[in-house]
Length: 148
Image (cartoon, rainbow, N blue to C red; front, side, top):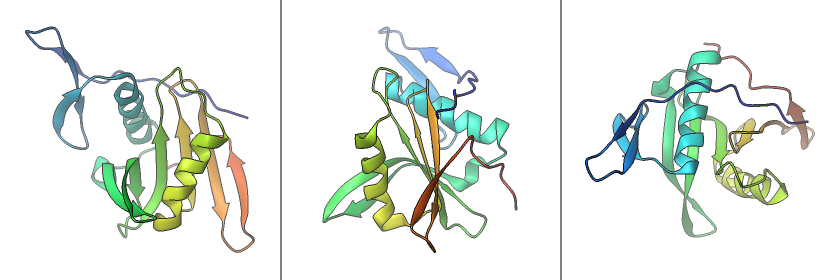
């Protein structure tokens, strides 16, 4: 079952040439506004404002090496010991959250070994908890709240 993403509004600006940018509070800079970037920024704000995750514990588009190739994770949320805790895979709103999207995040997880994976297209939010002791995946109704 998917959970609808709660929306908050990221800060936008329009450039003189008509292009639009969104302020990324994690990278602390303006970035080009694309449909996927909009979803990424909504997700960052949701995790921060609604679930209490500090911006300082988030990484956006961090590079990892998977099977000898460099890949970029949309968002990685770290725990208070700065270990990867959540992988977030963001897609444009018109891209369905399906097995292919889940497989992509799981490939990233072969490197990061996080307990939580989130998949979102801004319309759906799927949260998967990984129980490594039993090798079982559990779907959660929402992300857990941050705790120190």
